[in-house]
Image (cartoon, rainbow, N blue to C red; front, side, top):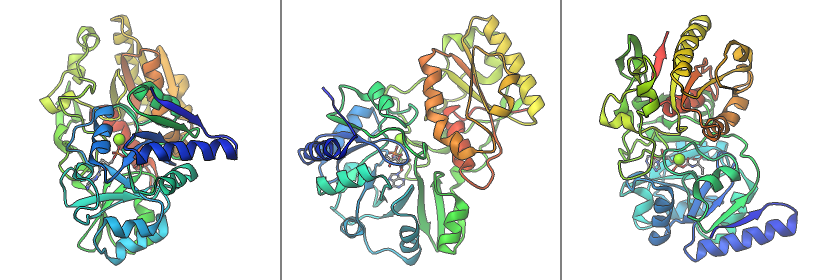
Length: 402
Ligand code: TXA
Ligand code: MG
């Protein structure tokens, strides 16, 4: 039974925080809002509690968790002394959507949190409910995103309920998440910042705040090209295997969990589907991150070529009896005739698109959409990088360049 509190007036909020904090202190697991996505929290020093997070999510145990703090004083208990770059980043971006990977103070958090690594990922969220909850619990709170492993992260309490009702002790409903994509995860290495997962804090902002070089983890770079029914496609399933310590993916699912397996009967039945690259290329390709249940393909290129490609593919799949969907932007929504056409808003407002992404992916699921074509966008210098990263993951790395 999952207890749900809705954030409302002062009294309702105080009561929710006090009860949820009590559950955390007793070793319970509670979902709570942050400015990025909803998190599923437990006392970071309580191994049994942390194990319940992994069990509820179906998360592979070798994928480490982010520890959430409310005050800088909590940080010094968790990590070893850190350098000037880390200090500048905290100064500038905390509270906020930036996670720092730092050397862990031995014994400070459960080894389940770090998955046995000698580093720990830490963040101070910019959400009043999250901050109050951590203060009231009186301990750092380990919290991954509050979704079943492999599913899109939850940006609303209803998403958490859909994935985890009955599997967790509590859920604080604080309305829709502000950013809508997970935090930027960085490590500092040899005087440089390395982005392990792009997010709400952009490379330009990091560079400006720290005054040093910023690089993208190589797992985020151009994926290896693979033959994909004639189109050059990105298909690098090994780009971020679970628990390799580089942590670019959200919940790299292992074979033991319920993550979606690519290759549905619909895809095989659809004419030309196998050619279009929907058959698994390697065992690792069977699993996708941040993914809707339907099979998604990311299509990139000149807008007219993209339109023609999607139109032909979609018509063939529809004739074969598939429920089809297209994920696009306002500017081109009228171009498509798929069963379900969803837009992320204007291509000129990628912040809003990021905010909407996971809800759209879950909407395809609600409507039972089996095949989805998503239009790529120009990442630009801001949150577009994170948006394209999540779209790529949601598509299981299947990109077609036309
Ligand atoms: O915005 C967010 O970051 C949300 C909210 C709830 O704070 N949390 C979140 O957690 O997205 P999760 O577990 O879904 O993603 C954590 C990411 C994973 O990619 C993980 O591999 C990486 O951080 N990570 C955690 N500890 C790490 C470490 N010590 N070294 C490298 N990567 C790490
Ligand atoms: Mg996650």
